[in-house]
Amino acid sequence: MALYYHCRQCGTEMGIISASGKSYRDLGFGLLSQQDQEEMMNVDQAGHVHVDILCESCDEATALNPDLHEQTVWIH
Ligand SMILES: [Zn+2]
Image (tube, rainbow, N blue to C red; front, side):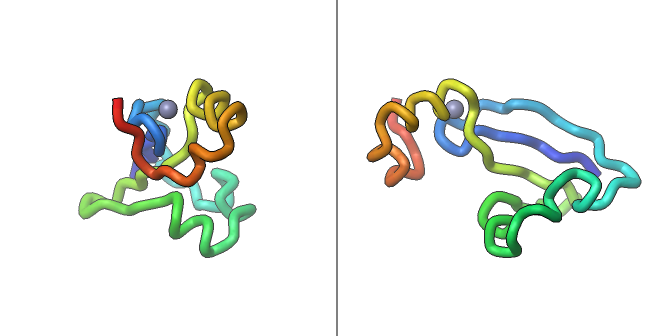
């Protein structure tokens, strides 16, 4: 399987990690609560995991504008 990291705000693809032979725990997801995992991670039909995170620029933007956290999708 592979993990695809996308920014949940702007949709930028941030990286792909081949996770063959690794468990969620190895990848650090064991630190997340079950709820966080369900919110952040989606498994597609091929068994690949899509992880929604914040990219650096969106992270900075939301730090400056906390209200933006309320929005799930930004309109460009
Ligand atoms: Zn972003």
